Image (cartoon, rainbow, N blue to C red; front, side, top):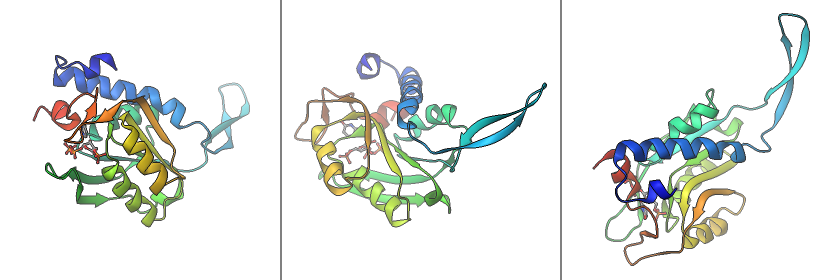
Length: 192
Ligand code: PRP
Ligand code: URA
C-alpha cells in the first residue's frame, strides 16, 4: 500500500500493485460463499470435493475498477464480468453515469463490485443502486482506500452491503480527494 501511494510509483508498477492487492483481498471477501459437494474421480478412486454453489460476478466501476479486475479474476477465474461506467463531475464531485452492462443472470450469485477508491461514496452508491435494481441481493464492495464519509454513506444507503477496504484513510479535502490517499486512481492506472 505504501508503494501504491508513493507519487514516484509509475503506472506500470501502480497497475501491478493494484492487481496484486486486489487478489489478496479476495480471500477475505469470499469467506462465507456457499459451496456444495461434488464427486471427483482421482486416478485412484472416486471421492468427494466442494465447489462454489452459485456463479460469481465481478463488476468493475470504470475506469479505475478495471485495474483491479485481473487480480480478482486470478482468484475467481470462472467469474462473469459486468461493467458500470461512472465518473465524478470535476466541479461538484457528483457521479455522472455513462455505461451499464451486466450479465443477465448476475442476480443468481454473489456480485463483487470493485473500485479502488471510496471517497464521497457517490459512485459506489450509484453502482450498488443499479445492481440492486437488477435483482442482485448478495453484493459486496471491494476498494483499496476508503474515506470515512464514503463508508458512512454506503452504510446508510445500502446497509446490507459489506465494504472491504485495504485501508481506511483520514478525510476528504475540499475537492473531495482522499487524504493521505494516492491521488487520482484512474489517471495513475492509465497514465492520463
Ligand atoms: C474515481 C474512483 C471512484 C470515484 C470515487 O473515479 O475510481 O469511481 O472516483 O469517488 P466518489 O466516492 O466520491 O464517487 P473517477 O470519477 O475519477 O473516474 P475515473 O475512474 O474514470 O477516473
Ligand atoms: N477518486 C480518486 O481517484 N481519488 C480520490 O482521492 C478520490 C476520488
